[in-house]
Amino acid sequence: MNNRLTLAAALVVATGAASAQTTTPELVVYTYDSFASEWGPGPAIKASFEASCACTLTFVAAGDGAEVLSRLRLEGSRSPADVVVGLDSSLIPMANDSGLFAPHGQDMAALTLPIDWDDATYLPFDWGYFAFVYDTTRVETPPTSFVMLDALDYSIIIQDPRSSTPGLGLLLWIKAAFGDRSGALWDGLADQIVTVTPGWSEAYGLFIAGEADMVLSYTTSPAYHAIVEGDETKAAATFAEGHYMQIELAAQLASSDQPELAAAFMAHLLSPAVQDVIPTTNWMYPAAQSAPLPEGFAQAPERALNYPTEWIAENRQAAVDEWLAALAR
Image (cartoon, rainbow, N blue to C red):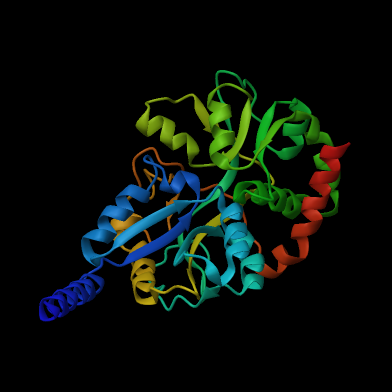
């Protein structure tokens, strides 16, 4: 009897050990809501990565880009995340201050960004330009500058810069274009703001529902309506002040318990399997373009605004303070 019990116990231990050894590893990726949605690039990326990694890729949608970083900062080294997808160039100063991210170690020779990029921690996966998107059936005279936007008094929806990367991008865009005069511009625009949403998805949804004339989005957003819906009534206003450039980034968590798998995923982000689906799922320019853009995809604006991390760090809080002051009046 004792021998049988001993044998049974040994079999249980052996079976458990074998099971532990064959458990499929999981890679946890924090990202923003629209990226992980069924119409975003997340499902296609999950399928292509899992086909080669012998792992499970789990996307965790955590709001907009700035909200994702806030969650990571709260969780610290206890975070279950291995990789974050959806930071952007305006968040680099705060991301650096967190100390949460490790060098990515990736070869960036394939990058096709319109600017040089050599950051060892943050890896670009797509990029675009902020713009105010409008409905041509409602807006007869599209503004061609921020000053004209103020004068025409169209209703607009924007995103909160404290939780949203487009929202922060708008503040930096205005700060870059107007400098010390940006506070005065916000004083004029404040009355036109219908609502301020936590993230892009909520703002764009309200715009599509007809809640405002214009919404802060991207120069490439109308391409979705034209290509997918056959709807030519959406357009992006071109501003004389130029358009602020957003570079969306991925980064590897220093606390990841799957560093090799995380590195493989980072490399996968620059592969054709990912880059070729970015234009028609995330509606942005691919960071390592290897195929022609779809017909009808928006051309980049002639004048681009892009500022270094140091400038962002110096001007971010002042830009937020000006915006808050204007909305409080």
